[in-house]
Amino acid sequence: MALEKAREEANIMPQSQLMKILKAEYGRNWREKFIEFNEKPFAAASIGQVHFAIGKKGEKMAIKIQYPGVAQSIDSDLNNLKRLFEYFKIFPKGLYIDELIKNLGNELKMECDYKQEAQKQTLFKELFKSDTYFNIPEIKMDYCTNLIIASEFIEGVNVDELDEFPQHIRDLVGSKILELCLRELFEFNFMQTDPNPANFFYDHQINKINLIDFGAARKFEKTFVDNYMKIVHAAAINDKDTLIKYSKIIGFLNGLENQIMIDAHTQATLAIALPFNINNKDKFDFGNQNLTQTIYKLLPTMLKHRLKAPPTEIYSLHRKLSGAYLICIKLKSKVDSKGLFFDIYNKFYKGRI
Image (tube, rainbow, N blue to C red; front, side, top):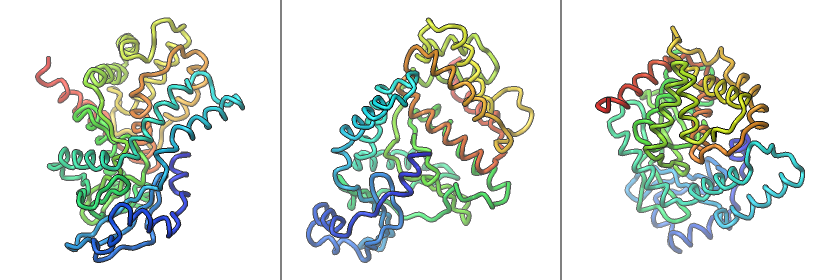
């Protein structure tokens, strides 16, 4: 994944620049706010870097500092990228570059708003306060500014590094990440849409997953969620007519597509919902599947015959869902995904019908 690669290879901010930001955000005597502040970052991201610190009350913190000028350069950088794609004619028409660039720009701007991210993380902590498996680090508001976000320091192993863990651990982690994805959308209508494995840290000592980085979290409107649930459920029970009906209502299709496109869209949706299919007898084995191959084979047809851009919500939603699948695939998790989905489906409609 290009975005993950960019994060891994992000350059460390020059020391002089770091000092300038700390003085501007915290004041000339910024060191007085800390018992300890490690000037060498322990993690780098696409728009910032993270430092370990100990506050005046002895609290261990992760201090994320945004690279200067990032927010101001988003529009110009994306416009340059668009012109590059158009000049070399390397962007398939069916991907609708204008809509894709616009959505990407909106998401990047959201990620640059650290005050909003702090609020989102606090909301997620409240949503999961009774959860026994997921932990969201506490935001330290006294240390947050426009360019700095501070939160409780957490321990754990990046879920991308659990390959050698026992199968039952990999099954549990995969199951919980997929459950998280479904609950975020269908229970909370509020989702952290960045599936970068570095945002999930498994703490094997307490058997919990720590969730971090909520800049890309977003709300989904109830009408969209209702219609999307109908599509996923229809695919899970192999009801192609209902699948196509609500694909038109939600905006995947405009009703003027040829049969080739309708068939390709139907097959792709059935493939995406295969882990939830009602005919699954056992746990879905993500380590022994052909989901990605099936969808890749259908992509050229859909790109050629697509008549409209997908709903704007789909860009971030499918990024998260595909990311959850890829984590399960890498971990070779075996998940009762059918049970997860239908449990959430029944709760979703409880009291409605």
